[in-house]
Image 1: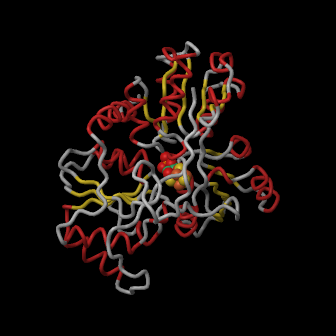
Image 2 (image 1 turned 30 degrees about the vertical axis):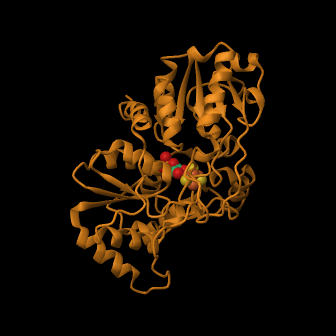
Image 3 (image 1 turned 90 degrees about the vertical axis):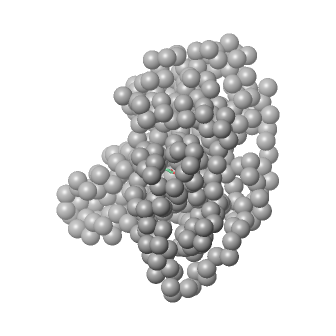
Length: 383
Ligand code: 13P
Ligand code: SF4
């Protein structure tokens, strides 16, 4: 039986919903965004904290924040980087909530992980709640296939979902290791339940694993039995959760055609969270780290239309003035939750630490953390 969880609308940064990745109030007195001393304040607070703070910055963060990151990376690299600094008592995570949760799980019990704005959630992660995933597993059990399905969850999911997957012998993946995670899963079972990004699951299965679109079905958590027949569930190789990224999901095949017509010889490079027809129309597909490396290796004078978050594309365009770097679609914008972490929130978080206060600590309960770690460690150990 599938239940429907209807989520009331919350405005970002207002109201409270600790059970989800969505917005909650910032408890502190934020400095004004217009304060001309913000950069200097951040610099001074970071210097005062020295090695006691380690600042991680995801590639989709604003420039004003990324300049203070000790390391930058995609979600895979940041998970590894967080685990590699057991000596830093405070980890300030400039990214979104699920990344900070993973950092908490992968760091020692003494380390405290701080998310400068608790409203920095992820709409994709919110598309798979624990209850919905449990209902789905019940549907798989009713169809007689739960023991041959291996769950694989994208990093972009809550700790609850990672814990669910760890409890059932599955693995976490990111956009840079999804194929290796699926190889691992298919060596242990005949079918995969892929959470929560249908596009990453489909693109990896079809473009990298030799499956067909017919091998994939989409499980809609809002419909009884996911909107699928028992036969469809039994015959699918990939059971894709009906979730998507609200940023990457907006790129269209029409924007690919349009840029090819407008810029002869352009290279189209997109993230695998984009829709399947966008990815099949592109020349290259890969995670944010892959996109950065592709631009570094590109010939001077070459043209690149990039389908990923705008902060990263703008940074790449600035870093490569000898190449023609453009955004794939003018209608697609920043990730609004990544953008929640701005300089006032970072200054507030760092200055709170200087005063001996720990703001916005992200903690995962011990039982969830244990099983989520099983699935995360399995990812970190993928061949
Ligand atoms: P990666 O960091 O794995 O490329 O994922 C992109 C993303 O959407 C992060 O929220
Ligand atoms: Fe979530 Fe997409 Fe934003 Fe990443 S870019 S945090 S997947 S909404």
